[in-house]
Length: 440
Ligand SMILES: Nc1nc2c(ncn2[C@@H]2O[C@H](COP(=O)(O)OP(=O)(O)OP(=O)(O)O)[C@@H](O)[C@H]2O)c(=O)[nH]1
Ligand SMILES: [Mg+2]
Image (cartoon, rainbow, N blue to C red; front, side):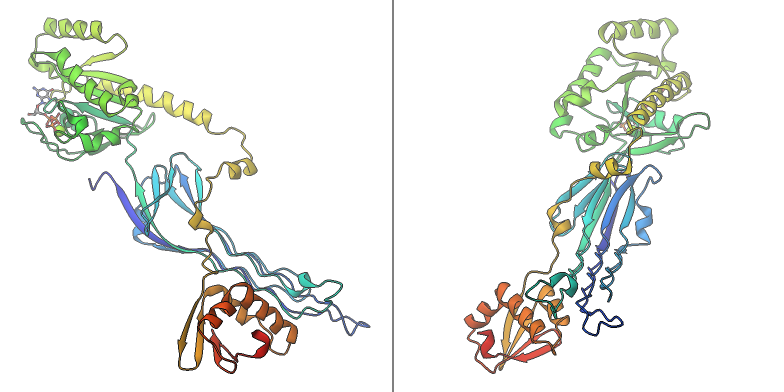
């Protein structure tokens, strides 16, 4: 499977929000100006976007870590801090994004410009200017910015072949791939010589280039997992046309075709409805009138299918087949171009962006843990440590606001549960204080 699926793991982190500021207006003739601390800028978010410009995940071999910018802290003159820049990671169309921890699929980016939020930036903390009210004209506190989100993601690129080669073992699929492309698949006169899919690219200077996938031979029961083909049927699901290879020297050609059709149908209804060209192969082994007879017989049973007599070995007819495939691919590409949201505005594009999964919004701030060692209680937790960092110890109000946060987060309750006594030390980040009566 290795050549079929491109795989990469990356670490991402959205930016932290900037802290709010505590500041006062200082103007001429106004010695006691009001609060002027601005709000911190939001941290940058991380998006992943599909693009036509890439075809592999190989870039991620060299770069595995992606960090969006942090927001800047609030300014002193009611100015808000600068936002951190968002970051967009580009991946090829067909990339599936998974959360590595849970192995859950976050998104399957199937079209050009499909975009998903994978980590939202932290909100900026509010500055003291925001907290001013008629009863509290001089708030001496602000909020810390919210932390960014760190995630470990798996990127998987599913094969996006345009043409799928299907047929019974030994029909000559690999031989045809070698005739049409520069791929060098194993070819042998025994069934199941192909064990894994092979890909080849038709490079066409005058028209679209496209990818052909040669998959292991299918036999009766393949859709139930018999033989090798089953694992690979899901890969041909995304192709836009199938070339059904038939061995012209077989005793019972119509039954051969039926066997493959039945397997496609059992696997998925969509697969059997996909457009098929029948390539009647190995015609070099038969006289001309015989070939015509067989072609007419197949045509009668499958009116809707184009039949092309070929020989993968001597390459008779392979050019005709190639021309048909090129025409089909051109038409498909043109119509998908038309569908590609003509005249779409940026705002609409954003609205079409994928909705975020929960983890992309789960800032790690709210949790906390209290542990005791000797007479000191240690409090761990992103949010509370950040609050501690913005406390101004000279200000009773700032301390009061901090106590309010301790209480509302449930930390005071937890300390009491763990039997804290007045005078015991409490450490939060770099801040140490004695537990006092006012906190009770
Ligand atoms: N005479 C003749 N022999 C062919 C032609 N195409 C393929 N063969 C032979 O048929 C045998 C099987 O060919 P492959 O290309 O390996 O067939 P396949 O469909 O890929 O087979 P699996 O991978 O086993 O499913 C080989 O011995 C080929 O040389 C053809 O057009 N004419
Ligand atoms: Mg083969």
